[in-house]
Every structure is written in structure tokens, then in C-alpha cells.
Amino acid sequence: MLKKFFLVVCGSFVGSFLALIFFTITAVLMSFVIFSSMSSSMGVKLEKKSILYIRLDGELNERPSEMSQMMAMIKEEDESQDLSTLIKSLKLAKENENIDGVYLDCRGMASGMSSLYELRNALIDFKKSKKFVYAFGDEGIMQSDYYLASVADSIFLNPEGSVDVHGLGASTPYMKGLLDKVGVEMQVVRVGTFKSAVEPYMLSEMSDANRLQQEHYLGSLWGVISKDIATSRNIDTTAFNQLTDSVMLTMSSQELLQNKIVDHLCYRTEMEDKLRRLVGVELKDDLSPKLISPSELVLTDNETKSGDKQIAVVYATGEIDGSTSVPGMSEEGIDSESLAATIRTLQYDDNVKGLVLRVNSPGGSAFGSEVIWKAIEDFKKSGKPVAVSMSDYAASGGYYISSGAQRIFAEPTTITGSIGIFGVIPNASNFINNTLGVKFEEVTTNENAIAGAIYKPLSEKQKAALQRMVERGYDLFTRRCAVGRKVSQDSIKSIAEGRVWDGITAKNIGLVDEFGGLQAAIDWVAKKANLGDDYSITNLPETEMNFQALLGQMARSRVEADMQRRMGMFYTYYEQLQAILNRDQVLCIMEPVEIDF
Image 1: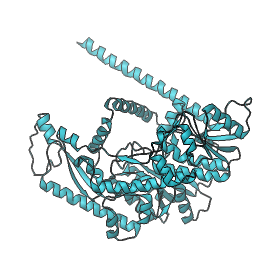
Image 2: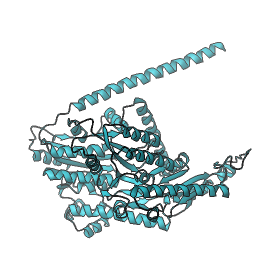
Image 3: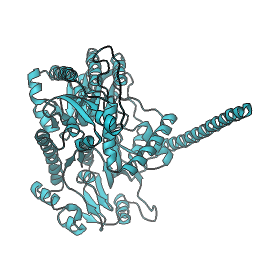
Image 4: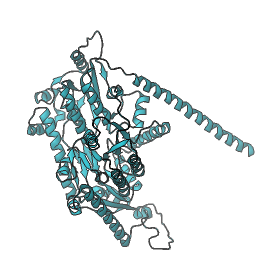
């Protein structure tokens, strides 16, 4: 027996020791790969007759994350796309005499509409340099890519390729039928006729109010996008929408050419030859044009500015105190305590002269939203200017944390508003008692000692108490907005009710001050702080290389990919149910709508 004990102990020790050695070797190898990649990247040399190559592929994020940077280096693939790098690279390319033009390679990039709008404006600004912008699609050009490509001097398409422009559509899974089948009831309390985030759990179909608001903001967003494309392509807007309704995906390349959707037909090799000739590089000298990626171009920027005149750009991306799978948003979400602590540090940093809060969030925890709002209020007491730059979403809690800023910037395609609040507590008593055959017995000292337990419904008294709490939260939310926007609380309530607004309408009703992207907000803060052009930008939270986090992310990604493969379309329902169980009970978050763009 003793011998067996020692064998087990020794075996465990040896196993742990070998695992430790494996982990150490892996970490060392990863360090070597990353260091080598970083060293080679830092040695980027920008040659004359170069072309900025923007590969429209993958997911467009707000900013580079530590995970995306490390994965890109290790896998030695094209770097993941982030809006901040792309916009900065276009600004540098506009001013750099070694860059002759921009080449958009349309491969299908997932992004929010406001991010694309901001990137498109950066391309339009680049064209002021009189340098060329060419776009190319091989197998096909997706709608999101085409929105960017439409500003190009010429759009090239493979003779067997296609263009898919189809308009906007939104889909929301309604799960009451599924919940009824498994014996789960979602006990909902809410304030706001349009606060539709809870509808999928309490209704079998969309309410009239929700349909009304979706039709309004989707119509407004498509109005901006279709007009932009039609104007750039010199097509009548009505005619363009008729083409959109004709199932453009099925059109032949010749039809696309005839209808001015594309300008030229060619294969990829012919496209590269065209680029080579355009910059004056002979085929015998170089088989491929001199392409430089956005991240490589940014690395060549050695401009330094004063360190005692900083504008802090703080990114609030994702769900507040939760997680989200919305494109462009951090999977980890916003940690309200951490973000508030960051803002508080900036408040007392004499080198920081102003703050821009970059918001890309559908909302989340009501309490977490209040924590961040308070941090912004305290920051303003320092006398430093603060502005908000809204990205794709700044809705519900995302608007809550924005409302106190001295100036709010958004794009016409931003989704915002959704000023409302609700609470959801699952009641799985039918499933637990009848389906599983499990019975819970209780012993309590007071009637509400085990209130909100998943195995029993709320009492009428408990529901009424929760309703009062939600109403109190709604009153606080609308009061915060009223003070921040310098209007009466009644005027805020008249446009609140949980209703989602597009950027254009939001500006018209006073929820937004000015149209413009992140740079417009930075410029405003610099002007208010009397900094002129002599200031530097500090992006926060900082991204750090973390091997343990990388390994954890790789493992989670593999598990999630496997679950998606096995569950198929039901994975969406699983994610939503997980979110319900892991979130706070009282939330200010917009509806879980998926917009097809």
C-alpha cells in the first residue's frame, strides 16, 4: 500500500515537472518568435514608389489588443485590422512622398457601420493628396467592403467575381417558445415602452414598438450608406436602390460593369501588373508592387511630441461588466471598477490636459454604468476638458457613461440612445421540479431569505419591490442624462422609453452635439485645453504582452470553435442564455439585434 502511495506521488510529481518544463519551453519559444517578429518589424524601411496595402479581411476592431498582436506575430499572418492603425496609416500615407497610393484588397471584413463610416472618411481625406486609390475584388466584394471601395478612383473585379450589395437587415432570435418547452420562465420588470432587450425572453414575436424603432434607425442608416455609395459612383440614389433590390449578387460581371457598379474587369495578377506600371516599376525589376501594410507604415512614424502635454484617449469597448460578441467590441468587455480607476488616475496626472472617452458599447450593468459616470464627473472637477467619441454603439449604459461629457461626437451611422432599464430573473421551477424531478426544501427565518432563487417563482411582493428598484434606476438614469445635456428630465423622458436612435436623429433631438470621429473629439479637447498642435496622445487601457493570457485565449478559442461547430445555429441561443445567467439582475443594455451589413 505504501509502495503504491509513493508511486502515485512520484508519478504526479514527474507529471507536474514535465508539464512545467513544457510550459517553460513553450514560453521561451514564443518569446523568441515574438522578439524576432518585433525586431524585424522595427526595421521596416519605406522605399519610394510604395503603395499602402489595406487588406479588408477579418474583423475590424477599435484598437489593437495584446491578443491580436501576439497571435499575428506567432502565426506570421496578416495582422488583424484595427481602426486606429488604419486611420493613422492613411494620414501618414497622405503626407509621405514615398507613398504613391492606396490599394484596397476586398476580401470580406466584418465591422460596425460607424467604424466603416469613419474609415471611409479617412480614405476621402487621403484622396485630397491627389494620390490614387484603387480597389480590387477577386471572388466577390461584400457590402461592407463595397462601402469603402466606392470612394476609390476605380473598382476592379475578377471577370468571374460578384458584388453583394443588399441593404440592411436586422434579426433577433425570440426564445420564449424554447424556454416554454424546457420549462423556464423569464421574470421581467422594465421601464420604457421601447426597451426591447427583454422581448426575446417574454414574447414569441416582435412588438409593434420594437418594429417601429428598428424600421426607423435602419432606414436612416441605409439612407446615409446608399446615398454615400450612389454619390461616389455617380449613380442616382433611386436607381442604385433599384439595383440593390434586383439581387445584385446574381449579376454577371458584365452587368455590374454596365450599371457602373465596377469600372474594370481583371484577374489578380493583372491587377498587380497595373499597380506596378502605375508607380513605374518594371516587371524585370520586381515581380510584385512595393506594398506596405498599415502597421508597417505606422512603425516608420518617429514623430515625438511633448510628454507633459497629453490627451488621454480611454477606450470603453464591449459590454459593461459583461462580455459580448458584437464585431469590433472586446470579448472581455468593460470592467467598470478598472475603467473608473484609470480615469481617476488621469484626473490627478498633471501631464494629462484632457480626456476623450471612446465608447463602443451596447451597455450592460446599471451599477457599473453609474460607477463610470461618477468617474467622469470627478474628472471634470479637475477643470480639464472631456469629450466622448461614439463609435458603432453607445446605447443604454453606453449612453449613460457618455452623458456627462462636455461634448459628444458621433457619426450619422452610430447607434445610440436606448435610455431605459430592466431586470430579468429566470424561474426554472417547472424544468427543475417536473422535467428533472428535483425538489428543493427550504428553512428560512424571513419570507425573502431566498428570494430570486432559480428553482421558484418570485412572489407578487418581490416583483413589486423589483419593479420599484428598476423605476428608481430609470429615474436616476434620466436624471443623469438631463444634467449632462443641460435639459429638463421630462424632455429626456420624452425621447427615452428605451428607444434606440441612429446618429442623425440623436443629433436632431439633442443626445449628440456634433458629427465627427475620434480625431474630431481629440481636436476639440486640444482646443479647449489651449494645446495647439504640441501634444501627444496616450491610449488607455494599455495593452501588454501576456503569455498566460495568450494560452488561455487560445484554449478558449478552440473550445468555442468546437461548440459552434457542434451546436450550429443553436450556439446563438446558448450564448444569450449564458449572458442572462452571468449578468447583473438590473441592466441598461440595448436589444440583442444582429444587423446584417
